[in-house]
Image 1 (tube, rainbow, N blue to C red):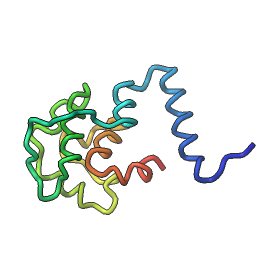
Image 2: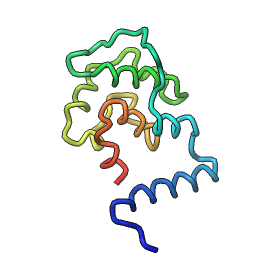
Image 3: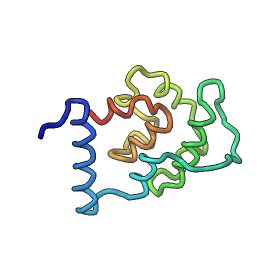
Image 4: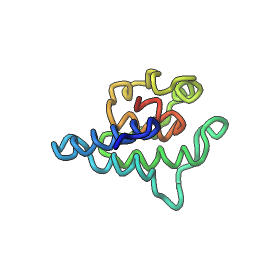
Length: 124
């Protein structure tokens, strides 16, 4: 049977992740974060930029900092991230240093925190 056009991207991502997990090249914690987001009941850290960063996005960033390769992402959060947030294509934007070197699922995790509406274009 054939796949519907709308399902091809999802199928490709799931197949790629399954292969990479089998090879041991995907961090399971990052993958779970992408699927479920940051799970936290409260956030003891005040949002540094409430004028452009929602409280939900801030909470996601704080939770993302618990991932090994994303430690220090939110503390301190640089105002340079506002350019990524405001970008028409944030998935193609250059992230502020040192986060511009982040690739793969970690980059998707950062994007999910700041602009979750751009995850699908980032996967394409």
